[in-house]
Image 1 (cartoon, rainbow, N blue to C red):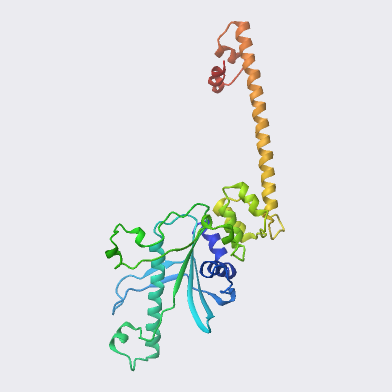
Image 2: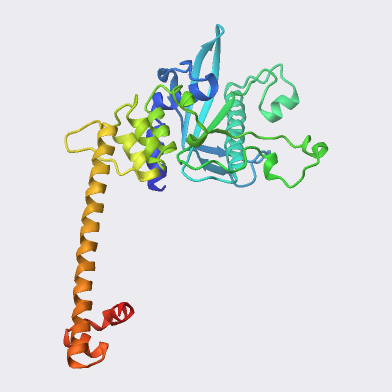
Length: 324
């Protein structure tokens, strides 16, 4: 796992950040999903091919973050399985990747139902089809929702549906092929109003990424209602957009607007130092050039000979010859 994958996973697996992402995407920012309702799950998706002898090799995949949700909606208990996939680059096979994760999870649910029935030996009253599949008529699957969070300022230009990945365009044929929709949060596509629908530092992280290539807008954003950032947020920004933010020893939070001002001041000082150095070098070159001309005239020798007399390195001969 690369460094970007690691820091984004550590950040997004926090229950408050995870809940904030889904509350924005599903409920428009309403605080419906509460962090305490979430429970971390094994990120391994394992499905054994169907068959009486379970012949074949198991499929094993690893999600970034996976959690279960138990909540009450309209006075009824609702159970969901929520997954997040973090992307720092566009994955042009994202519909297939997420579809596989979801399908493996549904297959796991069927297998777990079958194992439960075998353990309970509750076959009485069920038909042969139920017995063979291990999944009874009254059994229900728990919905799986996978959300992609794109940690890049660039637009997502990959396919958003399975059908987009297919060369067939005949709607009669495509109507027989189940489609799959990618659910995506991409900073470049978020307006300031949409960013305000986030209630955790996910707002600041996404806003910083969105404007990371536009210093004027980034300045305006961080000088507004911008929360202080802690290590997890700083790690994400440093790895994903090379923010070059850092906490001083003993600090737990970073005031980003001050950090940016310090960075701009340091950059200005470095640019001034570079300009001064260049001016000094140019002045030195002009002095040497005049000395070469003087030696050539007084000794009636070639430019190369004059540069030799002045002990100018041969590697610089071509540069001074071009200036004569």
